[in-house]
Every structure is written in structure tokens, then in C-alpha cells.
Image (tube, rainbow, N blue to C red; front, side, top):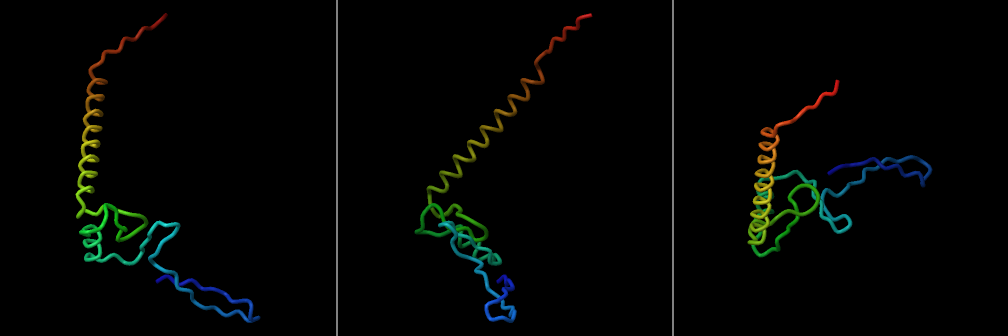
Length: 108
């Protein structure tokens, strides 16, 4: 856990004591977890049968998809299809730019 020195000036002498900050919790309703990640915790957080589509991230801030929930797989499939479709459109646009002829008019 992170320790931050804190000065107590109310007693007249300056005493330095260490304050422990929590490495996991909630801030404005959003979960955070900065504990050292372990493989078992990483795997168990992405696969939680009986939980909703979103679960707390094993490391970092916010939520992640619960792969034990069928709705998460639909979200992943739609996201993958949209990314594939976007890449296909970019490829077609590049080919059209290469084959177009450009007319240059020079006035003397």
C-alpha cells in the first residue's frame, strides 16, 4: 500500500506519521483497483457466471465485460463486425484515390 507522510502541526511539535491509502474501492460510484494483478484474479474477473454483463476490472478503473454472460459475446461480435466493415471501407477508398486521373491546367 502507498504511504504518504502527513505532518501533525496541532500538537506544536511536528510529528510525521504514515497514512495508508486504499488500493481498491469506489470513487463517485466507479470502482478502482490498483492492487498488484495476479493471474487467478485476472481470469476469475473476466469469467463470473451468474453476474451481469459488466463486472469490476481486475486492475485499473471502471468495468469490463463478463465473458460468462451471453450479452458480452453479442457486444464483441457487433464490435468486431463494425471494425471489419470500417477497414473494408478504408481499403475501397484508398483504391479509388489511386486510380483517379487528375487534370492539371497551367496558364502561361
